[in-house]
Length: 307
Ligand SMILES: Nc1ncnc2c1ncn2[C@@H]1O[C@H](COP(=O)(O)OP(=O)(O)OP(=O)(O)O)[C@@H](O)[C@H]1O
Ligand SMILES: [Mg+2]
Image 1 (cartoon, rainbow, N blue to C red):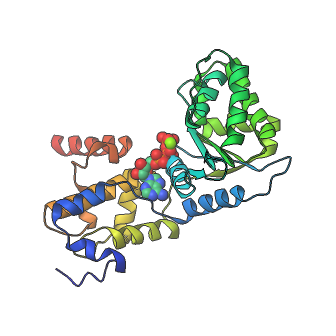
Image 2 (cartoon, rainbow, N blue to C red):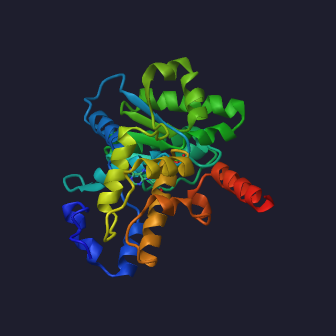
């Protein structure tokens, strides 16, 4: 084993673990605070501390699937956990985050929030009662922020339902006087921001695809410093970076899965490091590799066979 100096201090010990434990650790969910994700998290923090006023700031976090929107929401929720107010004997939920159901009519949406607030609601058809109950419960638990994850689900509704849903969001932003945060894809961004009143209220921040720049190099450096491999990897090198970007299409989720797959292989085959040539393997598991690249590779392989 090398002296493990290629790893960050607090990750060195982990590299001495048995293979199975290292592999299990690699496959676990974790939070990696790359600068863009951290910046969004800090914005949420600042919004949470914003003093109440008539018009509270609202934020839309948007980007393609797998860019890490839900991960930021989960992290922020975990950092601001539920509690219990001993003085008045009620649960406190500072950050209420709900994932929108696949076809969110406003009634279903309120139902989802009510459930998150720990209450049941029998009269599902009664939107007005659901709205009043939501408002009351939000006050009771001391909610200081409402996060709606996956607002793109509203696009599966009819245009009329979409309008009603956007009105619901607008109403909530006015009524609750707490910051409202939405996440969604580019189509959701277009839908939300074509509503003039919402465009006025919402700031928007994009989680854009990774490019071959300094931020991406630093991401590779970070991954190389925390993955429990016993020899230094080449992730930071240009050839590796280009291949990772090609294979992942610059998508955060795919980048992580790809590098994690390579790290597991490096443990299993005993090489204990990731090298540029590992990224040429034809059998890299499907979901981590973009379909476009797979098609290209198959094309190249067929061309080789026919010469
Ligand atoms: N900050 C992060 N730290 C560690 N892993 C991350 C981070 N951000 C994203 N990931 C990885 O990317 C995967 C996809 O992220 P996430 O589910 O948050 O994407 P999303 O933008 O919500 O996608 P969708 O639009 O499909 O809901 C996660 O499961 C996780 O493996
Ligand atoms: Mg998500």
